[in-house]
Length: 469
Length: 144
Ligand SMILES: Cc1cc2nc3c(=O)[nH]c(=O)nc-3n(C[C@H](O)[C@H](O)[C@H](O)COP(=O)(O)OP(=O)(O)OC[C@H]3O[C@@H](n4cnc5c(N)ncnc54)[C@H](O)[C@@H]3O)c2cc1C
Ligand SMILES: NC(=O)c1ccc[n+]([C@@H]2O[C@H](COP(=O)([O-])OP(=O)(O)OC[C@H]3O[C@@H](n4cnc5c(N)ncnc54)[C@H](OP(=O)(O)O)[C@@H]3O)[C@@H](O)[C@H]2O)c1
Image (cartoon, rainbow over all chains, first blue to last red; front, side):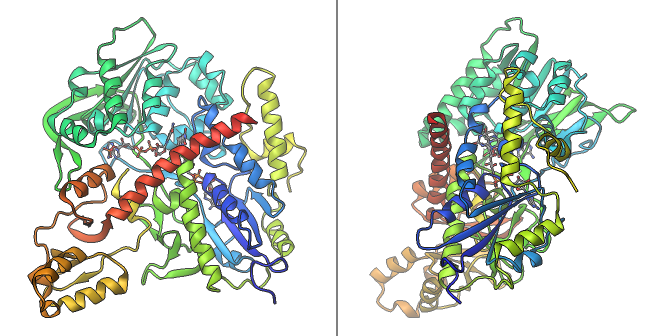
């Protein structure tokens, strides 16, 4: 038989997860000049693009244009998309091993981190992950309820996701009408009675994880005034020294912006956004119905660890914040895939530079790889996954060169296609997605919105005239 | 960006040596694993020092009987350690200021990894590349 990667015996790769990382990995593989590659991409949702569709904020349309790059990759005849097919539900790793030389897991981080404080599970306390997925029209979150009749909301964490959540809570109906926010979320948010949103950072302004354009945008909303407290955004000596030593202009600018919010006067806008620093939630308390009513906070001070990081330390100063709705936005978390080695504490697939390794000896598991958020953890913008996927693809190519691959019993694309169709007759192809995409955009254009999303697979199938079995 | 991000894609655990071993053994270990420093542990697996290529070279300049020396005669005993929660920026600063290249990482008192200045540089490079990639893709898409 001709060598793997030749015209008559192409390298067959299964990519699990159609987020940005899956597409970057596909792009790197298809770019190979000396190796013929065929890719099958599996995605548990009918639609591609992962968090670009279901994470990135609906009022940040421009960033979503990155999907044009992914469309181009998908247009390669050696690429096939199988949407609505979930590893663990429709297919197992053992089954994939029968059809592919290599498997790459790019499943992202599907769940949230917990604060680990009393009252975290009271009604009205939610992970930001759920709210984000809900307002973006993720089918699994369609029926979630958020009590937007509450006037005061806390968002825990000061990363860009926390900023997204706070911004969406503060937008007016007119602002949201220019976005592709899910229709039901648009209606619910239009009825919202939220008056105050508190974003809570446990460290100081210089350690905030959000980026400058995002924090500037908070100060430019149509009907919300953003404020900080002068005492909390004043730099402590340790942060000041660290900033002077690093000469990092972006952080200096971030602190300046946050300090400028302390001197603002209310302008009569109907909502107020408070960016708080050096506070940690200790407990959520509720009423008899089990609904959250308040958050107990402790004020922190910073100390330097042995290695120079500035960490928060609780003081004996407390405060109580009346809140009826809480979103914890302290990071996403990966979930294990059946039969794939996992590091539970960090929520990542066990790997070395992208090669999956076994739990006992940390030796590479032949033919299995990982990239993106499920490989390194839930951090980084869309483009960060590109060098990350490249590192993994380089391992895949090195192993191929050494002859270390899976030995599939049947590596023909048609055999794989027939097997998949039998396991999940209702899979969505890329052609199906392109039709859905076109209709969503047309529905939006008719009313001056970027798109109007379909949420459920059934609605998509009906719209494109695809019979479901 | 936290140190955990770097540790996630490295082999878990650390190459260690015991203090009574010879420098010859240590040099062999560094070469075998292609690493620049090794953590020195006592029989209870507690960190008691770190031995880097540089420690060996410094000793070599002064002492021709090098290979018969033991690890604990040459290792650095005051070792700064980090945790997975540390900010990568702070570690980068620390390494430049104190002029060292390896940082053992402890979690709940256990030695769980070691990161090098190369790891830090790669993480920072990938972060910048990521931001540039994201902007570039938006610009390209706008051109269409
Ligand atoms: C709320 C939010 C907003 C963001 N906003 C921005 C932004 O504005 N700009 C920016 O640059 N970055 C942003 N990011 C970061 C960016 O989204 C991530 O860097 C990127 O999406 C990670 O890519 P990934 O492919 O690793 O994971 P994901 O995008 O999560 O993709 C993983 C895919 O795998 C699928 N999957 C999971 N399990 C299975 C399975 N068992 N079988 C089949 N498929 C499976 C999932 O359904 C998903 O489609 C944001 C992140 C979040 C959380
Ligand atoms: N517009 C954009 O470009 C955009 C939008 C959304 C997301 N993203 C990217 O997606 C990635 C994920 O974003 P993210 O916001 O989920 O994560 P993130 O940037 O890591 O921020 C997490 C925040 O939670 C805090 N936190 C963690 N544990 C906590 C605890 N126990 N108590 C209180 N606070 C706690 C962290 O504070 P400490 O620093 O003190 O740990 C940090 O402020 C990031 O890389 C982000 O840039 C980008």
